[in-house]
Length: 296
Image 1 (cartoon, rainbow, N blue to C red):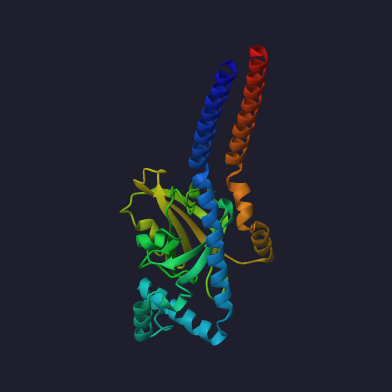
Image 2 (cartoon, helix red, strand yellow):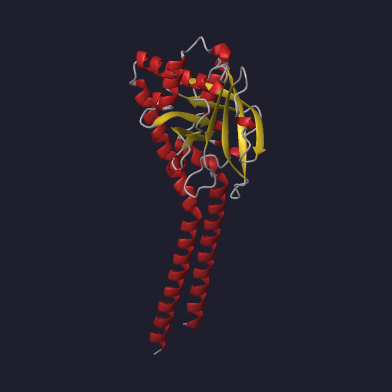
């Protein structure tokens, strides 16, 4: 009878421990899901960036030159600057407008943006529809295409706070003087941050073209998870000097390295939680063993 009671107690203890471990694993899964899914997206985004770069390498120089001409013609059609009218005819500008971003598209992407400060390298797509913003960075319609040049201002926008990807979640970590990079079918352009502001959703003044300027603005919603305003991080183009190139090369990280850079605090927290759980299990096992010995 005593032996049967002991077996029943052990069975109950096993079921109790199983439930506790199951609850712990479910809670752990819920906790780390955003991190794992975001890392997976980084991996997929890295693939998309590689896909863009590989397809660009297959383009011949004449095709690239023709595409870039149309992109610059499109950009000029936005300025209304009569002083530039000698460069492109009205027909060329209209053709550029009609094509919008088609001239830059390679496998649906019109370029990539690399932001070392927040460990993001993301594909850029034409437009800002939800289908675009769910998978990468969108180019805001009626702003300059991201090909650089005088009298241009390109606006690139992305979500923050999505459960399965980072995108521009950490854009508020950017500082004046940071450098980010835009890659198109022809070249890599470097932009130094010179303006960080919070604006109303209907305020477009900061997004307009400045005469003589060459700007790219990164835009996202703010405050985090409230999204009542817009955070803008504007950069002006700087020369791609050997020093900038050296910084650029040093800043490049593989998608798996971003895991450790971006989620270091998560990993420390999970490590501490796992250590405490192991301590609890050792203490519980010792306590149960002492209890069984005393019963014997």
